[in-house]
Amino acid sequence: MDKLKSSPPSALSELSVAGQKALRQLRKGCSYRVHGAWRFRGSRGPTSNATLVVLLEKGLAERVDIDRQIQVRITPAGSSFK
Image (cartoon, rainbow, N blue to C red; front, side, top):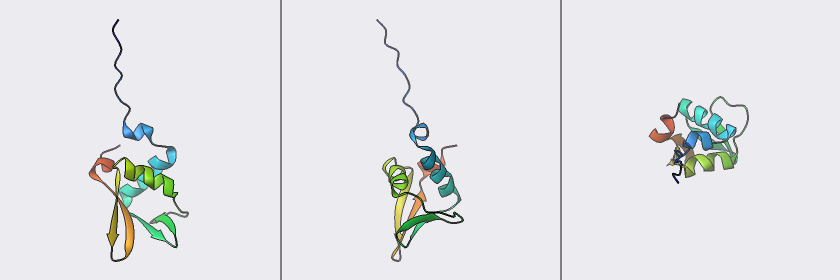
């Protein structure tokens, strides 16, 4: 019997709605930490740590330490998603 082989789902379809929104915001600029909360430039509220952790684990974002400031930036893999 032939087994149907399905193609693996893309990383973007595996992301939650919050993860997809965070990825779109990372395309515009980096995320930074203020008073213990992650924020995007121009956003009104904080972003969940869990949302950014998922992006970091999937390799769609990277953590950068610059002059005692922690930022999360999008990687080439993350910017290739439409």
